[in-house]
Image (cartoon, rainbow, N blue to C red; front, side, top):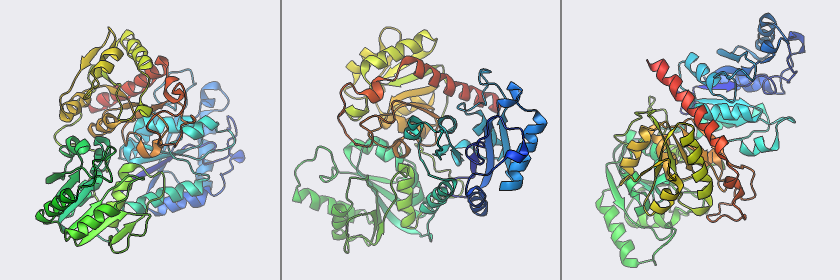
Length: 522
């Protein structure tokens, strides 16, 4: 079993072959540059290939079903066989489930291949391909052409210049999470001293450590403790505020560091795997771990580590955070078991929905990622008028905000623990939320997410992972990739431009999907 993907699903026109509008003539089929070689590399790696394509020309009368079959047969003559073809023949006004950006084609392709959308990556040339991938819970790679709009490029979860580059990216990511050789560990210390969301996205990597170890001890900070309690594979937790990581650090205290050193020594740690964000250094902790007698230490480090690290790892930019963490574990020799699909999980909470309610969570860990309360209040009002039961959730200190956002038509929900919030989300039809911890919690319990995503950080890296989602907001706003915690642009245009109609459409898209899942299960 591959580590990340079972299948790669391609759009046809503009991606695999040169786009000839409403083409019904096999003689006009021309492969995109490098297409055959790229596909053969993926086949050789054991990945199954499929095509997911809108062909409204059939409904419009531009070609016949026989002509469409002839064109597709010619595609296979030139590019090799595909394991499934999924075609939407409907007019764009038909309101069908299969026409991209709806996720139906991706879901059907995954089903035909005996896998799930979260184990698929979709490669296409326009925004609707990427939207269909996200709505199904699949990964997406955009390969732009001259017809791809700039806003589609900005919103693309991941972009590659050519099909050759897209295939290379897929194989590189597979290689990143695959250990060169497997290790067996005794007591392994995992470190993620960050917020709840950061701890949650590290979960698959921690499961990899647990799969190969006798015991996993997790060192986390106070902000991530509640999430740490929910992670499968963790046997013991050390909660400690690290002054080189915490956003509001206390002064460095020699006695405190000495106490942490002794605490780690007492835990009997054989080796440590340190997980960090892009802006954090693992080296201060590595020095402390060496002092505590830890024999083997693995971490990402751009700075020269001297003798502080045994395995110095590097990761390309833009890798999704769960995969970035898994790559560190793989560098240390720890990989997930074959039956683990690599998604986020929490202990003891599983999907029970879709229920009869939509959750709106207005709070965010930093101001720049918060949708303006006025917009959220209008969104909640519109959802309620459309017949949705809406629960507005409040985290610690967020009750006044939630009370304002809910207005008079929604209900206020105040889960007292992260576990309570997980159970609430597990029963929801979907969650409407910014880029903050509850988005990752929803992903961990399998609940679809309407992601009001401020582009201060890359969506490909920090968006809801392997769960059906719709991304809203101006992806190309001036705050893009600034990593600002306070909005640097007057009026907060990346999220203040999200209107209620967009959210209603997103909720309908995701709820229609969950209804189809229920029908298939029945």
